[in-house]
Image (cartoon, rainbow, N blue to C red; front, top):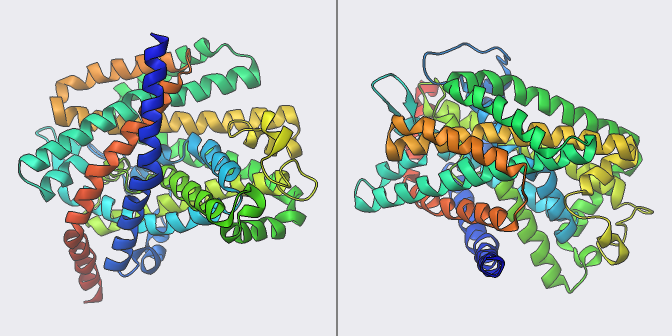
Length: 469
């Protein structure tokens, strides 16, 4: 059995490496560039509109709708899914492998990703459906079948639905709960199985409450978790303020001359910096993956453009705020002169620092080793827990698309089992399979986005004509 698992792990890892490092990076970057040009850089022209719609009437106790969510609740649910362990672990891994310059490429990717997610959210609103009970169903399966109303479209939609149910609904929630269980056991000494029991109870109550209960939780949880992380990060950066000019200098310098910090020749080092920044950035903000449109489709708005500009702010918060602050903490504490990684990730330091404890070491260098571990554990709990809530909803929408509303409770029960199992075991094959299905769901989503670019542009022009009259 172990030999079969080892063979599978090697095979899946190889496939993932080719998909994420080559095909998907070019595909997702291509979608972002394509939509940036076709919308005449909507992420720049309409950025102010998005900020105004998000923060102009911000409330942590939004109106309760009979179906769907408020625009802010939909954004909060999307951010809950976007801001996960990848913001801490993912950015740490990108910096270790690609150097501080990888963060620059994450910014570039996020900039173009804002145009992609604008397209995803507008299409999600434009093609969503209401069932006989008034419930809202929307997401890539609906705009895929709009783009291709034939057998090919049904195949692509079914392929996407199966991939996202496995990637996010089941195995993805498993790896998130594993992160929660392991960090709580390390920081507080609480057995991970007890953490699993508590998680299952809390998640079960929220899942059974439907979309409205989920919206009520995420609209409060997301601002709280953001405030806790931002507060801790700003404390560290204030203490290390003298190093911030050098920190930003390293991000820009090593974006184009990374060989000085990651070794190897210029070509190899530059490939590492760009590919790590692109790969980690794309799968942190999830633009183009087809996950967050499920949340945005629930927004009670009449103009798809209005939710499109709101969705752009989700990518901005995920990458330019949360991920960037984590990166600044790491670089300003561990990469500056006299710090452990001053000369790069080489030698003895590789035995004590890796992507899973890099953030703990960075925060611990200022907050103290013990408190730094506790702070990162609490942040990871909020990030991973909120991701579980968002991902479960996304999987549920696709289960209903495939099997009907009657299958929703069965899906919830299986998802809760996976959440509990995640706190008991850590299996590299499960992580790799999660990444594989994550990668595969991008392909049908990206095909539909290219096919429906004319629809997105027409929505944008319609909005502009309406507000110029």
